[in-house]
Image (cartoon, rainbow over all chains, first blue to last red; front, side, top):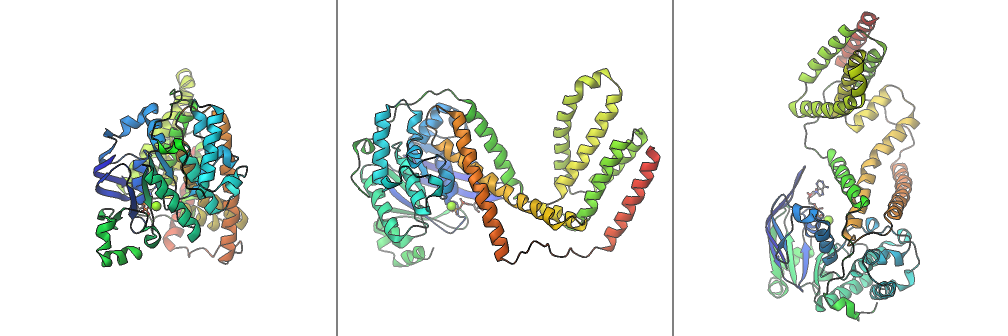
Length: 241
Length: 265
Ligand SMILES: Nc1ncnc2c1ncn2[C@@H]1O[C@H](COP(=O)(O)OP(=O)(O)O)[C@@H](O)[C@H]1O
Ligand SMILES: [Mg+2]
C-alpha cells in the first residue's frame, strides 16, 4: 500500500530522513520509534502529502506521490481523504467553534446529506468517548480531550490509513489503553495504522511491527512482533527510548 | 468508549468527491504556507555568525545617519560618496551575506522602481529620487541581514531606550516565530482535512484568526509568567563593555556624517 524507495528529506539546516526504504501493506499496525529528532514527524509529513521528498520516491497504492501529483487539487484531496493524520500537537488541529462542527468539518465539503453527516459525527463521537463534549469549544478542552476530538474528526472521513504522531503523550494510562483498543479494532476492520510512540511497554501488545530510527535519520531495525519476542536485549533497548 | 464500529467505517468505499475547482482560500493558503515556511526557517540557516563586526548600536546609528543624509540632501556627489562607502563595507562581508544583501536589494528595489516608473519617464528629477531609494534599501537590507534579533535588542539598550520599549520589542520578536509556526501547522491541518469544496471560505478565515488570537493571548501570558519565574523583573541586564574599536568607529561615523552633511548643503 505504501512503498518508500531511497527516500531522503533535507531541511535547510540538515537531514530529516536519510535513504529510507520501507514497504507497508494494507491492514498493518506499525509503530515508529527512535530518539527525538530522528525523523518520525518528517516521515509522516511526507506520507500525508504535506512535504515532498528531496530525493527518492514515495508511492501510495502504486501511484507515485510527488510535487506534480499534489499540484492537482482533485488528486491531493483524494489523498487527504485516504490518509488521516492526528498531529503531535492537537492544539493546531482544532479550529472550529464546537466539537460537533470540528468533526463535521471535512464531511461538510462533500455532497452528503445532512442526516448522513449527523450520523457519522455521532458515531465518531461515541467511538472516541467524546459524546458529552459535543457542544464544547475545542480550544478550551484538556489535552487528552483534544487528542480524542482530533481522532474523531479524522475518523469521520473514513480514511484507509490512519497516522498518529505520538498520540499517547499526555494521556493517563487508562486513556492510552482506550485509544489503543480503538486502534486495534480499526486495524481488525482493515485500516492501516501508523503510530509514533516512545512508550514501548504500552504499545507492545497492539503494534505488529516496529520500525526504529537511529540518530542519523536512518532505519536501524524493522522487525515484527514475533521476531522481537525472541530478542530480549532489543526489547530492553526499545523500552529505554 | 464503545468499540463496535459502525458499518460505514468498516468498508473502504471512497467518499463522493466535492467540487474540484480550486478556490481563493486554497491558493492563498499555499502562498502563505510557503512564506511562513521560509520565515520559520530563516533563523536556522547555517551561516557563520558575524560576532566581532561593528557593534550593533553603531550600525543602527550609521543606517539612520545615511537615511537622514539622503532625505535631507539633493547633492549628487553625496550619493556617489555614500555608494562608495557602502561598497567598501559590503566588500568586507563574507560572500554568503553579500549575496543575500544584493539579492534582497534587487528584489525590493525592483518593486520600488516599478511603483515610480510612470513619473520616472516624465520627470528627470525622479531619477535622483530613485537612486536615493535604492541606496536607502541597500543600507536597510545590509542592516537586516547582518544583525540578529538579539543584536537589535542590544542596540536599543545601548542607545538608552526605556526598558518597557525593549520589553515589547523583545517579546514580539520571541514569539513572532512561534506564532508563525503555529499558523503554519494550523493551515496544514486545514489542508489535510480539505477533501472538497469549502462552502464558507471566509468563515474559515475567521475561525483561523480567532484560534490564532486565542493562542497569541495565551502565549503572551505564559511567556511573561515564565520570565517572571526565572527572575525577570522588567529590567534588562547591563550592556556589554564597549570596545575601543567601537569608539573609533563611532568617531569616524560622526566625522563622516558632519562632513557629508556640510558637503550636501
Ligand atoms: N521545520 C524544520 N526546519 C528545520 N529542521 C527541522 C524542522 N523540523 C524538523 N527538523 C529537523 O529534522 C529532524 C527530524 O525531526 P522530526 O521529524 O520532527 O523528528 P521526530 O518527530 O522523530 O522527533 C530533526 O533533526 C529536526 O531538528
Ligand atoms: Mg515528532
